[in-house]
Image 1 (cartoon, rainbow, N blue to C red):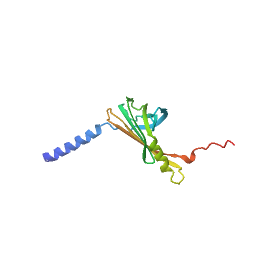
Image 2 (image 1 turned 30 degrees about the vertical axis):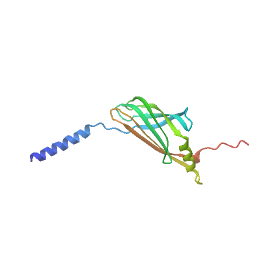
Image 3 (image 1 turned 120 degrees about the vertical axis):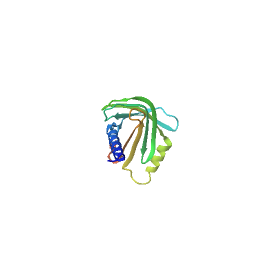
Image 4 (image 1 turned 180 degrees about the vertical axis):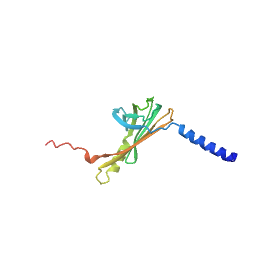
Length: 159
């Protein structure tokens, strides 16, 4: 074997060994655990969104700062940031509170866009954001779904 071929084989082996020794990580799971109202200014609504952050990895995740964005019907509906910091234990979970702002003008635009004469039965939403920092760096998250408005119960007539 030529020295060049030996070098290439050795480099490939080291590269593969390096990849195998890198920590494998699964993405964090984030869900909305709760919401409560906050005081806002004139043309905004403020909510404190409590996120349940689950870490499906062995290594703990340290974070300092959170960003959160909600899109409804493919348009930004609410967003917020928090300087909260903490640790999500390996194979653990924690609650992180993020104040978000909903612009009244955005809300009106959303409602007007939904009132195009067609009945609205499902509303698509997307939640995305990030936890800043830690051993694995920034942890991004995303969740998508839909609210099925047709399954909401209507109150019985009070007649």
